[in-house]
Length: 461
Image (tube, rainbow, N blue to C red; front, side, top):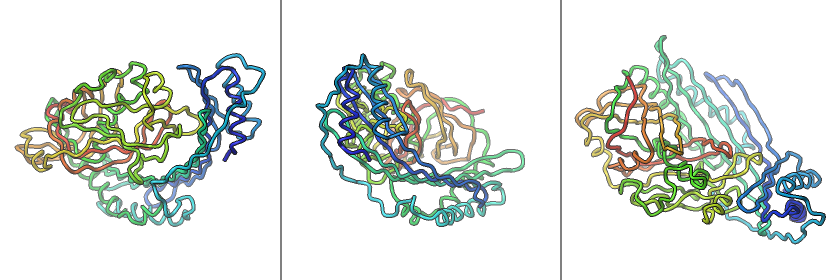
């Protein structure tokens, strides 16, 4: 880590051209990954990410520069380059920089650091999952298991006097089952992860997760094509939250809102969703995949109410966009690594539990789609238009789950889907994903209970 003396000198040099704020983000991260196909290790990689980024503000303008050489000489040179982009370098270094160390409370305890666990032990657990995938059915032609862990140490300091550090330890296993009848393939997945130590994989029933991935792939292999048209749709809990995350969550980030590129600009206090909907982004949930102690600007993580009973209550705000919007940071500034300037991002974003019974939600539909497990998708944050694939789907007839269907997609606008959520269950759960944006790829949780959307366009055949 960098000493306070070094930090003060670098920040002083960053302020030499008239900037009104400067920040340094230092990172040292160890990454490990193992890939397995049909029980055989195909690849094992260990890598290190080491470097620092320097950011300078002048009003509403921002300059960012980074280097993987963290010697004092290199950091000062990087600070000079960033400062010269702001304005003319002045001859005297601004030495009136004093930082004070702040110690953060770690609310995400770790017992076993994954990078210190032997590869043999990781592979042993991966083989358990792989065997369960393959043993489920003769129709399973491929079992893929990926394991990854990272141990990130960061230091964040700025000209407002902040000097603080954090350590983020995450690990995740991703299971993929491929079923085939010789003509077509179908895939089922499971992907547990957490801001936690390897103890989570000593506790998880990986065989059960492997069988579940294969249950999905084999069920979808024998499913018929999903019919197309407008219909009521039930989206199940857990990873079903990806619909809110993509279709609505990104449009509530200041990254979009501050530039006027969101359908929810200037709508705080207005009803933008059904009264059934309360949506939250909470980085303080203990050991969750998207959780944080502090964000990548050093602001402590917090619980942010985005929508309450259908009323827009706030946005996810980082420091720079907070300047543009005249709002304080919400602890939402995140970045993939020191190579990216931070911006507002989600952490653990979810629709809060409602009061509807899940059985009643299913019984309420005469003819519709049950999206039991969602796949990937995309959204245009300016218009709110989205398109999502359904990994596992079923038709509902006369209030009962009827038959599996495949090839379903959900198509619509985020603002419309929010208003059309008319039933919200009680069974909140979270799924894990990686979210990409202008500051790179970051881990996020996506969550919700079972919900019913009264009408949505379903793509199929």
